[in-house]
Image 1 (tube, helix red, strand yellow):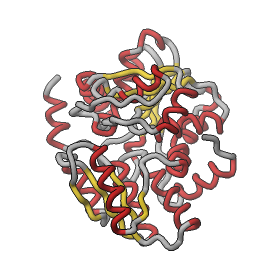
Image 2 (cartoon, one colour; image 1 turned 90 degrees about the horizontal axis):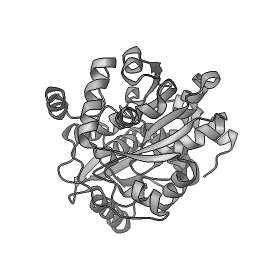
Image 3 (tube, one colour; image 1 turned 60 degrees about the vertical axis):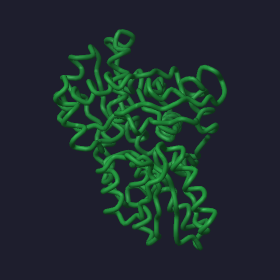
Image 4 (tube, helix red, strand yellow; image 1 turned 45 degrees about the vertical axis):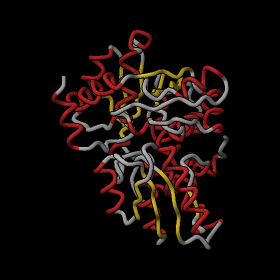
Length: 321
């Protein structure tokens, strides 16, 4: 997946019409903890609390141009993608239906409804919700927004262009990026090519949802069961072939973090930076911590990809140290 210079610039124009760039900070306490300079890219500071909003904006911009007849869209999500769909649909005056699995984050559901989406609960995991969204699209003639698409990745890339541009003269040796369905990692790879830095990219999956790591090692799509409780943004059972291809080509490695490591990283982000991270949003720090001997004395980047965690769950995580 390659983007021209003009495609990235157009994505920036679309994204910045709706939100400012997010900050990247080097936190002293994280540096002390990891024995390395640690730059955090704060995608928890977007208007929807996660990086996905960028992809929604560029996708809907493409839709308005290529398919102006579309008035109603449908998609499936565990939360952040759904908020990005709701946010962009509202800006373009379109109706949006979003399917989530039962037991989904209460607060992500509330945030989606507040953006005007019609929320439908179906099935017990993302895959089932996704299949139901496909059926609704077929039955009702709706435009189905996939969870991985070139125009989603193009928008997401703007986050990492900001990151690499800001640190260009001192680009990190490595950037850890959480993998859900792969748009975040693909966006980071596209941004690295656009800015021309040599930063290594390490993908991070949940140890309780290992499909992308298994597939990365096997060289082809491997399905894997999902049992993560904390990292719903990484709860992927079936990798997207296009995303896998990019990860296999661009990743230095793909590592696994357990829910316990993610919980510790959520606590650390709160105590060391006073940022709230959801499970997937803390996974990059969990991985950087796990791999810290390899990167001691270097410059490490982490993606704090989102902060949308339910209050009850976050309270539990903070108490359980």
